[in-house]
Image 1 (cartoon, rainbow, N blue to C red):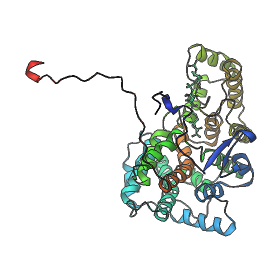
Image 2: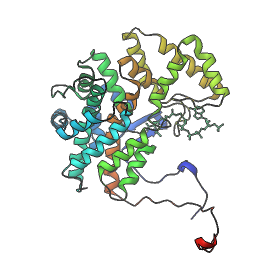
Image 3: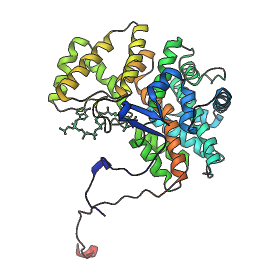
Image 4: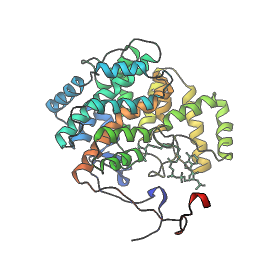
Length: 374
Ligand code: SDX
């Protein structure tokens, strides 16, 4: 048993998975063997959600059944809607996501049942309801009426409709769908590993996803897409970008949206998301953010050889779509629920309690002295 410390579990393989793999030979993230960019080009998000959860792409009737199930489960309980109306208006939407999944766990009649069939039913309820809860908060905090989900709208269309009261151009919906496909799954990232760790004690899926959301909120993980937008807003104009990013690097700041534990010469999801960021920027007739994007990226690669990760293009894309900046990571949540759930189910199927060791460096043994002598 080696006592060499691998802080952050750097490079440590802790289990096997069939859900996804970054395949260096095709420089691509693959879900159940399919390249993510191939899925973006040929599928809509619901097909990929089905793939990640079930292991195969659906045929037409399987997709119809899956979509009907997701749309049927969108309805929130009156209690949850009342709770959302009472949440503090300045609550961070990631805390709202975490809290609403927790409340769903209180309400779910199958919380105690970890069987594969019960878990899949609970997954569909969490998958369907979380976007509705988030959109409801999006409206409530602006003092607007909650817009109920519509069964005749796709997952992406419905989210736009519940947030803004309308469905945008199909190119915008497609770009949003692509971002959800790219965000859906990424092997043993910290939030997924959090979900697997919680599951390893045979705790329930609502608890595992609540923990995963808490982990994803961190700026070193999913919270980076929000931080990217804060950075771009601080830069303000393309003409300030070169000086701003060089000063940040001189200060040894961590630049959000760049770097990755696994990808060391570029996140394979970025080219696809960058292409759709460009499409949305042209549709919105916005050049500013693309110029800032390109200048910062160039300096990061030339000066530090650090490449963008998927959060870098998604941040400005969501901004141009009209979402509030603190809603960017919750969008990551509504997609990643699929990946988290697939891993939770996989952990249950071949479970071993996750319990690493620590190298002790504290006090050696010593006797207790009573209070009146201390
Ligand atoms: C996601 O794991 C996943 O799969 C996550 C994810 C998913 O789909 O689930 O891909 C989603 O979380 C993407 C990452 C989003 N986070 C950020 O954009 C935050 C900024 N990135 C960094 O914090 C960093 O790159 C990490 C945390 C993402 C990865 O860092 P590592 O692997 O722990 O490496 P490190 O922090 O030790 O950095 C190695 C060197 C350091 O320099 P030295 O101290 O050796 O001189 O590279 C530097 C770092 O300072 N570095 C950066 C940097 N990233 C690494 N310097 C400035 N800005 C950065 N962004």
